[in-house]
Structure formats: structure tokens, C-alpha cells
Length: 590
Image (cartoon, rainbow, N blue to C red; front, side, top):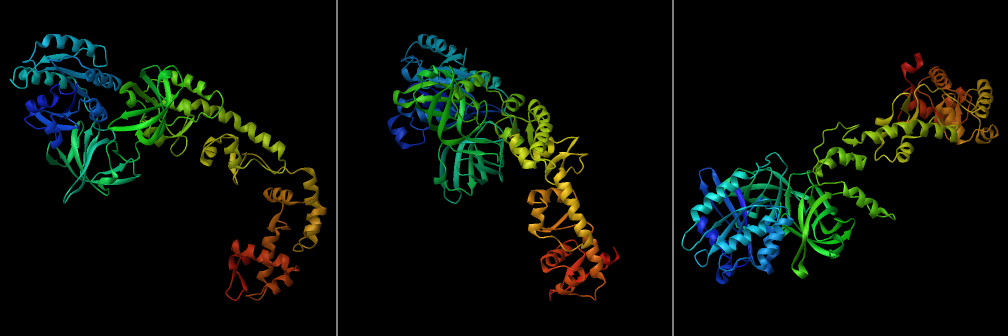
């Protein structure tokens, strides 16, 4: 299937022409048929030849309904531009053409309608000239009369030639289905319609509803009025949804392949049209079938930051249109350059940002994005529209190779500087390194560490590093060793430790160095005393009480209680329900 939108001035015969081509009534509402005026989007289709079916999105031409027109053309790859022979080029012709140019539509055909009422040549010459100055370029123009049938065969043949030139649809791309209608069918529930421009929809698919933050399931599909189990792009599709109410959805919502699009309420764009400095502070952004008010902040000569009233699922390279509704004026097209731009909080940030944007072209280039962002998750880059090919450094984290090299160069200096300032510490904690290097996760520190550095005990240290205690701590530990050798379980109190110069930091350093064992706050023993305690307690009648253990070890409850708890944790003893303990056989043998 191919999908083509109509465009042109009000009452130039767009709907009449579609009716003559398809035999269907594109105007859905009685109000439209009564007034002879298309108000909302209409849909009709026909088979030009076997295997070539074209669906038309018939848009309103009246200036009051331009937003409806933009909803119709925003996601359609080609246009049938209609100009009446008896009226020629008109104001709404110009506005519709400006919108098509702003959206970057490149494929089109011109129909000079009502050619039975006037010589079509003057209207044809002007229309072709106007179209040639836009993204549509040189287009074929066909004079036609829906009432007499003259030129209809030529128009169908020209449509065939147009459709044959359209690019092949991207069937393997993720789905972003812009909703242009939402309604309820009795017995079926919520139904939405739209143009599927990429990917495939299947019955049973789970789709993310962009505006709601949760998913819905495809209960059924229709295309060209017939039920289908699968709809490949490009196609007009009606989607019956389960898990969402009709009033939850509106024109401009989108159904998405889950976790494949970035929801953005701030984007940086390149503007094609009016000078950025002349843009109004508030405008309407039209993209897909969505229309959202935006605040415009000028950055460079042709770049701006748009702050959206509500988030949309956008990707790098998306095309949209800025319109000043108060003046019925198309300000220009926009190309999305960045869907997750940095904040502009510092003085001069806007100028710097404009310089960065000047080099971007709206193509989702992996190396360019990574160079600017430095560190980014692979899945986040994919949601922006980038296809990742670079291998992650850890999990799904991608890091620019130049930045990674600089971080590797900084790390040894950071570790050495930490040790100079913290002589009792073997190296900085992993989280300290993470913050210093501005890494988003601890796992990236581990990925960054390479010989001769290593991660031990939650710190970054030199792999061949041995205990290196300051001289005062060494002397204090030696004095403590002498005292504990005489009475292994008579641990000195806090005051004695203070006299020796062993505060919390010094004790922690001695414990890391393996020269002391801390069994409680300010309760330390020599390393071998743990096994000695298990051996001594193994000689007691089993089980034994805390009091019996205290007497056997020649110590106080201050030491005995935490020592027994340590022996429990290490598997030397087992605590019984009556609070007595039993030495395990393995511990007794050791």
C-alpha cells in the first residue's frame, strides 16, 4: 500500500477529485457534506493496478483548519497538490506549500482540477513554478476534471509513476504510530487510526502509549476496511487496543515499540525558514499528527531550543514545523538535532551550545553523539535514533575512546594523590573515584581499573601493594603486641589505645594491614588469637556458657561476648537456643 495526502486551497476540488478516483466519500461528517467543506481528515483508497493500492488522506483547505491539515500530512511520504484551473494559485495554496516545504516533503504530483471551467495552462504554469522552489522540486502536473472525467486516466497513470519513485518502506524499524483519530466501537472498545510509516504492526503486539507511560495490546487490526493480522509500513491502519480507554487517547498521541524512543520535552533544532531571531517566543510545533505549544529560545543564526508543553517521542533527524497560529504563518521547518540536550545554566552556555549545534546535520551518527556526550547508555543512544555498533566498556555503557583514555591517565594520579593525603588508607574508595572522575556508576570504575591498579575491599589500590603503616602506628602496634602476648585476651580499653595513639582511623588501617583483629569498637586482638580461642574453648566440656568461656580465656565480658559472636560468624562455634555454645569439630581440629 502507498499513502498520499492531498493539499491545496479550500474548495479547489480535493475531496471531489478523491471521490472520482476512489468511488468513496472521504468527508466523514454530515457537517462536511452539508457545507461542501472538508473540516477534518478524510480517508479513501483505490487500486491503481494489481499490486498497487493507494490510500488518500484528504485534508481540509480552509485556513481555520490548517492544524487538521498538518495532522494529515505530518506522517505521509507523498502529496497530491490540487489547484483549481478557474481560480489558480490562492493564499491557502501558498500556506499548504509552505507547510510541505517545512516538513521536507520531497515527493508530489500536481492536479489542475476543474479544467472544464477554465484554461488549465495558466494555473499549471504558476503551480509548477511555485512547487519547484520548495522541497518538492519539479513535479508532474496533470489537468483534470472530476465532473467530466477528462484527464482522470492520465492522473491515475501519473500517480503510478509517483508511487514507483517512493523509497522502500523500512519494515524492520521500530513502530511510531501517530494517532489521528480515536473512537470506540461497541463490542470492540478503543480504536485509533493513523499512517504507519515504518515497522510492522501485528495482532498481539504490546505497544507503549507515549502519553500514558504504560503499554496496551493490539487486539485487532484493519487496513483498507478489512481485518488483517499484520500491517507492514507504509499503510493506513485502524488499531483496536486493549488496556486503554478512548478518552485517554487523542490526536497527536503515539503508539510505540517499547523502549525504543526518547520522550523529550526539550529539544535543540535547526530552523529552515524565518530567521531564528524573528521567531515568536511562543509557537506551535507540528510533528507527526501532534501539535504542541513550545517556547522558543534562540541559540544561533539558524538553531533554537524548543521547550514543549508536553513531551513527545522524538528522535534525532525528525522533521517538524513551527507555526505562529496568531498570524496564520508557517515560521519554518525544524530538524531535530538533539533530543536530550544539556542544560544552559552557566553564563555563555548558549553561545557554546550554538557552536556545537552548528556542526550537527540531524543525522544520528554514533561517533558524533558519543564524542559530545562522553558516556551514555547504549539503550539511551538507541532511543535517540542512533544504531550502536561500538562495544560497551561495561554492561551497556558506551564511552568515547578519547575520554576513556584520559580517564585511564588520570586514575593513577588520583590514587597516588589520595594516598599522600590519607596515609592510613591503602587507596581511595571506589565511590570516591567515581565522583572524582564524574562517572555515573561504580561499575565503570571497575571497568576503568587496569594493572598495576586493582580493586580490593571496595578500594582502588596498587595490585602489588603491601601493608605500609606510618611509623607511629607501627610502634604503637608493636607495644600492643607485647602486651597481648603476655595476656592474649586481655584487650586494652579505649583509654589505653588512646595513650598508644590508636584512634579509629589508626585501628582501621592496622586491621586492613592484617596486624590486628577488631572484634568490636575499641576491642582489638592479635590475628592468631581467634584460632587460639577456638582451640582453648574446645577443651571445655561441651556446651559451655559465656561465663565459662570468659574464665577459660582469662578475660572480661567486654571481650568475651563479641569474641564469641565473631567465632559464631566464622563457623568456629555454634550458639544453642539456651545461649550456650558448642565448638564445632572442624574448629577443634584446627
